[in-house]
Image 1 (cartoon, rainbow, N blue to C red):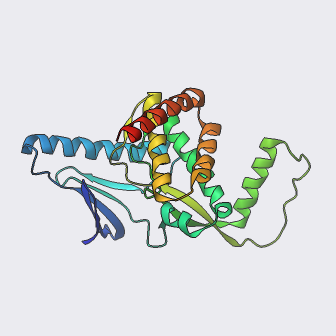
Image 2 (tube, rainbow, N blue to C red; image 1 turned 90 degrees about the vertical axis):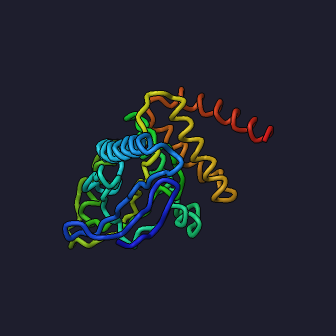
Image 3 (cartoon, one colour; image 1 turned 45 degrees about the horizontal axis):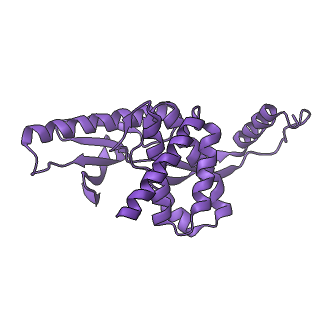
Length: 248
C-alpha cells in the first residue's frame, strides 16, 4: 500500500481491492488513551463514518463508493476518485468567481441535502470537497434542459430535438469526502455550526472570499427545508464566534 497522507485520526493509503484501485482510510491507535476505550472509540467513529457515507449518497450527495468496512483493522475501503480530481480549495484558487459560481451553488445545494436528511458533516472545508469532470452525452444534457424548461414553464413550445449525432461533453461535479467527524442530528444549532465552520474555512483559506461563501449560503437557503431557523441560529453562532475572537 502507498501512503498518500496522514491526518490527526487516520492514515490514507492507495492500493487495489478485488482488482479495483481503492483508497484505504485506516484509523490508528492513540497511545494516551486506555486501550479498551481507544478501541471502542475508533470502532464507533469508523462505523459512524461508514453510515454517513451511505446516508449521504441516499440523499443525493456524491461520495466515494464504500466497498468494505474492516472493523478488525479499523479501516474503510473506498473508491479511488483518481488523480484527475482536484480539491475545491485548489479549484477556487485557480479560477475566477464567474467560473466557480455554478460549483459553489451546487456546494450549497449538497449541504442542504445533507442537513435536510439530518446529516451533519462536522468538518466542512473546501479541502473536503473534490471537483471531478464527468463525461456526459449531449443528448442527456438536452433532456435535462428540457425538464428544467417544463418545470419553470418559461417556454411551452420548445420541444423540438435536434437530430445531430451525440457527442461527449464534460461537466464538473462535486464529491464530498472525509466524514470522519460526521453525525446525525435534527438540531438547528448543529447545522448552523456546520455552516459557520465552512464560513471560517473560506475566510482563512481564500482571502477576500465573502462573495464566494455568500453564493454557497444563498443556494443552501433556497434548498433548505428549515432555512429561517437555521439562518437565525447561524447569526447567533457568528456573534459567539466574534466574542471569542475579541476575548482571545
